[in-house]
Length: 468
View (cartoon, rainbow, N blue to C red):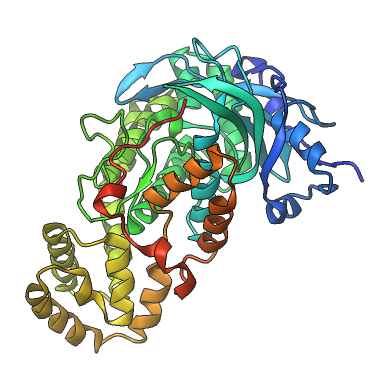
């Protein structure tokens, strides 16, 4: 049976100045590297038995029936600096399936490519495939990965590298920057059309831009809290990389922290630490302020809107702090907070920072009672441990709480780099092993103990890259 994708393309019915209609550029020799069959079934995609057809469609050589390919327009603040026009420079939205976008990344030049080639190499494609699916397994809102296709072409970055195309699935690709570009152009009609579309698609319970803003703020606060709970660092939280749906999107230079330090940075382009681990809570407030500014033109009274929206943004830091405190306390088994619990949790983080304790392994070891082994100065850990044990006597089933809050496995940066290095040579076994293991991140499985191990000094990944 031929591949069947039940498209219904609502974004393509918006005013055409929000996008450019453009087909993916065919590649030389598409070859399927990976396909997410369970996700395809969830989307109602059928006829996926022919891997050559999958390679042609998801490599961009065949546009499937019902697709309406386009590249989306948006703007954005990049590292705090305004760029008035960006857009999908190497991505094409094939269309929507069961309410989700199907987008090809690395599918060739578009009108928004500027000087780029519109292509991707296999490294960032497989990185996003692994990390986005790992995030899904962790229960964190995220875009998903449906397919990875090798192109049979060589692309040029710092050196010549094998090309690939990723098929990404998202609730939508509407960004803070999508609203910004229309507001900046004073296109109120287009802004209203986008707003109505976003409300219908993501926030049907909201009645006006103020309620919409408040709903987006809550989702973003919850998302960043979840990132921080697993030591995730997005790496490039520009407003064009901030999806209003509340999903993690654009995995470029992302990384997971090994040794805990609040100012950890991996992204090679983040030279000032703007998007460091602990800075993410502040940045999401800044991003939401930019969304609020873009929504003001939709309100009948601009001064009243500014007052109302400012109040919503000013309440966000306290919301984030409350969410983070609750999440951090669950990671140490506490669900009935007491006034002294904040100090108990922050004292642990301080000790972890001072001794370079591994973030993931330390919290996982609290569940099994072996956390002492994560510290170099174990005598310093013992008084905290005794105080914590006494505190847990007032909690019900703290071990079970911690088991659901503390994964034992994350996509370690050095393992991802090993996987990519193998894939460049044609060896996909490390990719397959990582995917299988990361599908169950809370399972303590002795067979994957090596994947839990922090990097040795020679294995440390000190910088991650966008891959564009």
